[in-house]
Amino acid sequence: MKAQHLMLVCLLIMFASAQLAPIKTEEEIKIDLSLEEKLEIKGSNDIKPNQIFNKLYEVDKEAYDYLKKSFKNVVHLVFEQNEEESQVKLLNSIIENVNFTKIDVIFVKSPIGLIELNKGIIVKNFDKIFRIHNFENLQSQIFDIINPKIEFLQTEDDVNKYFSQNQLNSLVLLPDNYTFRDQIIEDLETLIRNGDLKEARIDGLKGYNSNYKNYTAPTLILHKGNDKFEQYEYNLTYTDQILDFFYLESLDLVNRLDEDNYARVFGGPIQTQVHLLIKGIFKQDLFNAYYWVAQNNKMNDLKYHRLIFTYSTFDENPNLWSLFDFDQTTKTPQLVITETNFRKYQLQKYICQSETLNQETIQQFIDDFRNKNLTEFYKSEPIPEQIENQDIYKIVGQTFSQEVLNKGKNVLILFWDSKNKELFDDYFKLLNEFSLIQNKEKIKIGHIDLANNEHPKITVDSVPKLMLYLAADKKAPKEYLKSSNLVIQELKAWLDYYIGDGIAYKQEKTDL
Image 1 (cartoon, rainbow, N blue to C red):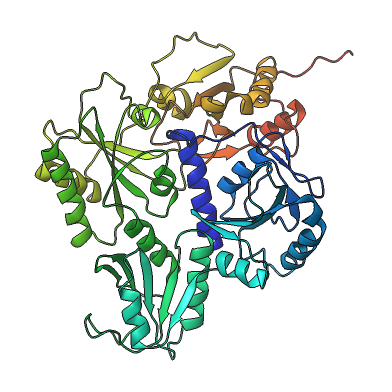
Image 2: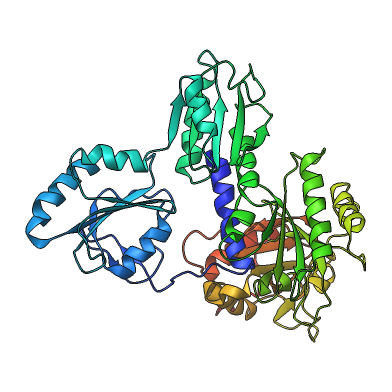
C-alpha cells in the first residue's frame, strides 16, 4: 500500500470510529513501553501505527488480549520457570533476525498457568492460531507463519492442486519474463502484511490448467472456492486498484453492517457505500431486489466504480442512523448513500426519496447518484436563540451562511466535535479569554459542532480547527496554527497580521 494511501485509509478509519457505531475498544488499557521487558496496563494511546516493538515483553492476560487485537502477528512464549532463561535466550536470538519494518509482529512471554495452561509457543497470525511444541528449527517455524504467504507454482500439477482447494485465495498468473514481476510480488507482500490479502500464489507458467480459460498475459484471479472466481482485468502495476479488488471481493455482495465488518466497509479504499436501514425482519422480496441491484452494479459497467452494499437496524448502528436524523420512530425501510471525501471531515450523504423500494427505484437512486442528480443531505441542530452583539455565538448548519459567510464582519470560528468534548477545552478557554477584549464592531466569535451540523461550504478535514473568515474574502478562510500552547498573545498577533494592528480587540489603557 502506498504511504499516501495508507495515511488516507488510517484517517478514514479514525473518522468511521468517531461518526459511526464504534468498535468496542478498551480505553483503560495502555501499553507502557518505557520498561525494558514489562508491559504495564494503564490506558490505550501507546500502540501507534508503524511503531516497532523489537523486544520480548512480559504480559498478563489483559495486556495479551489487547495485543492480539492490535497486532497482526503475536508470538507468545509460555514457559516453565526452570526453562525460562534458555527459552528467552533462544527467542531473543530469533527477534534479532526479524525485519520489523516489513512484518507487524510483537513477541511476548508469560509463565505457564497465567494465561495458558500448556507450555510452548503460540503464534497468532491474523485470525488463525498456531501452536509450536517442538523448538527444533524454531526460527523457520515462526517465520513460516508470520512472513507474507506467497507460494510459487511451478508446474501444471501445482496449479491443478491449487484449484482443488475450497477456500478464498488469490492466484497471480505472472510469467517469469514479465517486466514488472518483482514489483508486483513486492506489492502483494505489502498487501498481505497490511492484512488486505491473506495469501497469494504466483503461477509462472504462460497459461494454466486446460479446464479453465487460458491466459498469456499477466492477470490476477481471486479463487473464492467451489470453482467460483473473480478476475481482476486491469493493469497489475496499479497496486491501489488491486487493493480495491481484494477489499470488495472479500466482502459479501450484501453485508450486514455490524461491529465486525464496519471498519472494512468504511476503512477501505472503496469510497461509496449504499445502506438499507430496516426494522425487524428483512423481507425476502426487498432483500431479493437489493441483492439484484448489487449484483447488477457489479457485473455491468459500474464494476470498477466500487460500491459496497450493507443493511442494518437502528440497534446495530444508531450513530449511522443519526447521521441522517433518523431514529427508532423513523419510517423504514430507508435507502441512503454515504461517500467518503478525504478533503472533508464529514461524510457526504444522500437519502432516497422514493416511497417504494424495488429493483427499479433502488437502481434509479444509484444511477442518480452517479450522474450527480441528487441533493446532498446536510444535518443541523435547531437554530438557537441569540442576542445581537453577544460575546460568543453558537453556529449551526442552518445559520452558517448568515452568521459566517455574509460579508461585513470578520468571523473567528472554532470547528469542533461534541463526541470528544474534553479535547477542545483549551480552545474554548482561549475563545472565552479573547471575547473579553474583542472589538465586536470588527470581529465576531463563534463555534460549530461538526458532530451535529453540516454545510456545503464547510471543508475542514479535521478538528479542532480555528479559522478566520475575513470580511472582504469569505472564500479563503485562514487557519490558526498554534506554535505550542494556546496563548492569547499569539492569537492577537495572528489577528493583527490579517486584520490590522489592534483592530480585532480593544487596546489596553496605559498611564500617561
